[in-house]
Length: 420
Ligand code: SF4
Image 1 (tube, rainbow, N blue to C red):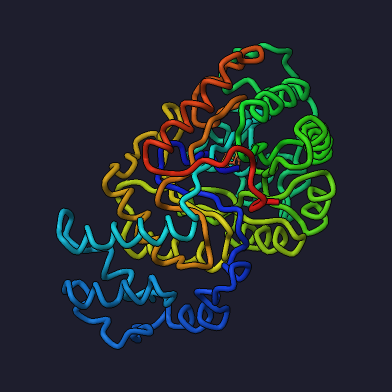
Image 2 (cartoon, rainbow, N blue to C red):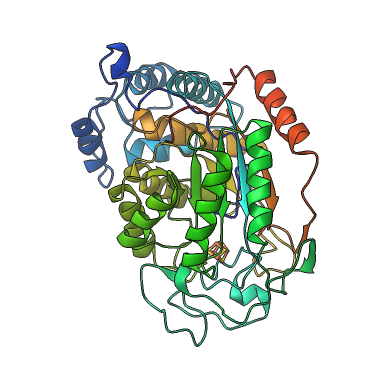
């Protein structure tokens, strides 16, 4: 699960056009071979496409290089590291921000969208992400393991930790008002009602977020119910644990169009999930014909330039259709509660750098354009209060649209086909 829902983060916008503008008769901005060539240079100190990576922060060189990036050429690792350190408040920083903003809006066709996220459970999760409220290690219900499995559970070391269900969980009746240490599922009928209310309110995508402990069969049943309730045109995104290819294929059959998955900073160290499992899941998602949304997260103070740049490049190589950056939400009572998220200015800058690094292979993200509304279980909170069906969904969605319009984004009246 992604515990950071990109709320108020400069993230993404959506477009109805295909990835490349070939439908308009335009030449694709970036060819596959260009991406491969540029990324092949990531690991070395060799120059990128531009012959002048040294002195990049000299303004005229930077302007020239960024014009190349806007035209479809890629920055390499050495260049990204150099740009990461430009002086805050400098003309170079402003140039990077402006270029990223211009590129991001062009790629997104300046369309803003409102996405809804519904958390479906609050089970002790074997993913054991130290920053998550639902991690086994933070819930007081078990000991962290190194393979993503619940203590005593036999599902260890599979690409799918989400089959690790805890069968003796009590399922609370609605409304739920419980501390996070009490495992709970949001009743399926309530999830369906939330989804229907969000669809009615005019969101452009609905994400169903579950812990890796949520039973996979139950999740698929839930997806089918939600699909029936929201109709065929509403993009449904799964935000779940690691998936085998067969599971990804099954999600598609159940009605899912896309998945959120990523390799997070500190994966395998701050979490019990091996980065290789995350990467395999991303590949499975794409092989199954599902679209991939993948973020650079969680960002916090104290991370080195190399850590952040490498995280950006790791996610860029996945070639997700949509992306963004998220800062950590330091939840009181969790083992990483002391971490401080990047401040807003720095987050904007890292997002801009990522926007440039992803180039046109990823159309959505990093420069605003997406606003999230949510309901149900919230892994960022230390307590979870689920009310009966909320009556203010329409207001929430309308407020989000007004915020986007205030930032100059055009809001489509209905979901676009981008995630379908
Ligand atoms: S502990 Fe589980 S629910 Fe929490 S972020 Fe990790 S995988 Fe997701």
